[in-house]
Length: 121
Image 1: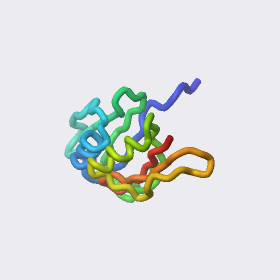
Image 2: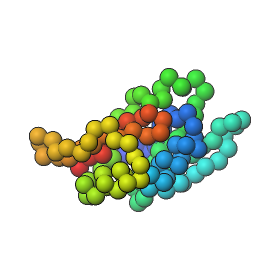
Image 3: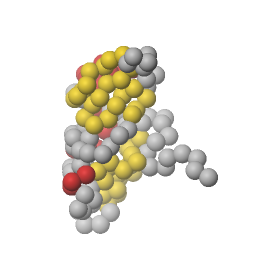
Image 4: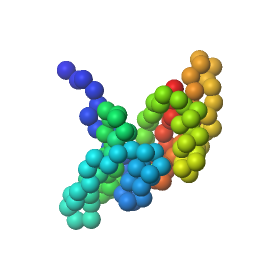
């Protein structure tokens, strides 16, 4: 039976730029970075202590997917502190931190490739 998510692939145009964003701005750990054929690499990053792995992929013919169709919400213990920290690191938010009618908090940000994510509590 399915027990969880093994890996989430995020299509990117520039793997170096994406790697810097995920490790330096979001604070993810680099798990793997190795050649995968001519001009391509296999890169895996993950939140510190988290169970989710993200592959920063540059697929031939997948350019139309970059900046689209990623619907991932990141959780955090203290959303206000995390929001302020990410802003101080230069993360671009497309929707400011707001309290939702049901009581949770959320903000939306974009990576260097145009992929949008939600930071939620």
